[in-house]
Amino acid sequence: MTQPIEIPPPSLDDVLYEKREGYAVITLNRPVVLNAINWSINRRLMVAVEQAEADESVKAVILTGAGRAFSAGGDIQSTPPTDGLPSPSTMQIIMKIWQMPKPVIAAVRGYAVGQGCELAGMCDLTIAADDAVFGEIQIRHGFGPPILITPYLVGMKQAKEILMMGERYSAQEAMRLGLVNKVVPADELMAAAEEMARKLAALPAKTVSVNKLLVNRAYELQGFRDGLGYRSDPAIAEAMGQEAADPDPHLKILREQGWEAFRKSRDAVYGETDVAGPGT
Image (cartoon, rainbow, N blue to C red; front, side, top):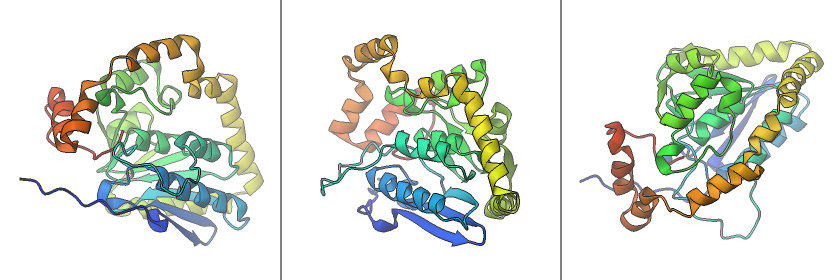
């Protein structure tokens, strides 16, 4: 019988920040739960991104995950903070990455699924280890995508496949789809990310910033921001409201029987025995 995993309590070290020459490395640091995103990570990640943006000597940022995963997505087992202080949403964080003038590189090893896939997608460039696994698996939980970035990264047919099937993709397949810029051997991931960061840091900072703004602006003129705010669309809200009125049976299993029973029920249709972790 599988022993339950003891999940560490929220910590100031849930996100690590390291400044290097010309760039900074931000590390999601909840490896026991494959860096599943909770309020603690969101708080620390926002602080780290703001720190990198404010430091004039930092010209580029690498975002990665500790241990064997980038991020298994949103932590559906997370409990709210007890200090009563506000925490930024994942949407606020990804928009901070989108708006900041400095380039952000996602260095992905292991799982980048659900919100982890979306967080990597919102970075300006993504380098994946050859063991990386990507996917928008929220449909398995009965959820829509929290951050609707996938249609802007891939073509229409590919976006529908990714969002409607809920499957997972290898690093090479993710690169073919348009989720990844480059795939490297796992033991070369950080070296490749740092080489890219150094190249970006050596270029004229103002031009790099303007070129990022130009690409972002082109997508915003195509309705990027409206797409991210899809929940405010009356037709979408109506459809989601109807869905919410019919609670997902998998989540009922999660509440009543725990994570393992939930996992087995959710993944039975896929014939899978390994999962990314407790994220969405």
